[in-house]
Length: 435
Picture 1 (cartoon, rainbow, N blue to C red):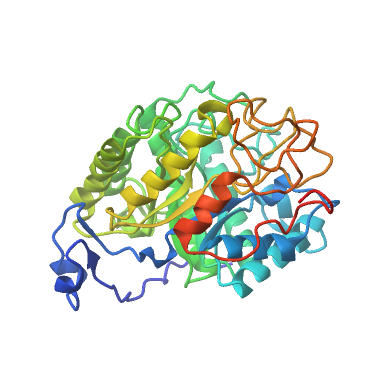
Picture 2 (cartoon, rainbow, N blue to C red):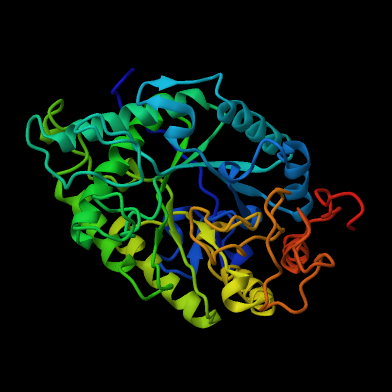
């Protein structure tokens, strides 16, 4: 396993922006450094989140489900690919595990369908203190010789190297998830209960981005690294994203990060943000969607990138969506249309991965009771019987008992298909006799 970082390469950049053809042929450096311009390729704007971990062997039909995404018009899919799904420790990958075999089939089917895979992991192994794999971050930053924190970072590097080496077909890797969210950036097993303040979260995240980027590019020099999507749990503009982004850039510029602690000299520290993430990313959830506020706040965050990097950078929104159970289906449809209309005016955003493909009809799923209705399709698992959302009186594909029909499209699926320019049957997973 190499610790080299010889992955730098020239990247040809296409011009993009509101001036369209007037800017054709110019270089990135000639684009005005403002949020009205960008280098994103919005031909892949329409994305989806697909959680293989929520599917069961009894109902999983990878061929039909990928065809369903293709029919929707999906161009990118965010895949949950946690270390613990395929690995028992940082260096041990299990090819014979069912999760591995299913993921290989899913990735291949998406590629065949012309859908770009984005791999995301936000678990980590900790081989000290008997701590298990988790989304928690067990130690505050301490880069002193022999510290548990540095050992944890070394494990993190090895884990990423193992994962990326095993899946060379994945060309985009998102490094962790919502690193400014106390639900995940916690030093305990309890969501939201963290002793880390925002600055400490950013310190840990900066190291994670660098160690993971080193591993990803040592394993696959052609892969692109993505900042683990930032978020604001109470909605876009209400949290710490702006401060967190600036802390990240301050850390990178300081020269106190960006090298392997205890193995390399501090004089080799990288101050190049691309060595930490090549693509920026955040999750702009906004329950009460307001088009202009959405544009203005996202532009504010992008301006932080421009100020610190002095160049344009692609941005992915790897999660975005609404819960029918909270806002009702009609508001969901209005928001969906308005959001994609707004993003079309944000030329730095390349793709938006809607959360998520399916409802989860279990009463005690990972995101808690009451979070069942995020999907574009009713839960595809026939063992999950859950009722129609009472806030959606016009919901479709409800059976005579008021239960959601397994795998059936919701109204939002048809709106997504219309917006994305998709075509084809959206009822592929409906149980026979229920159409």
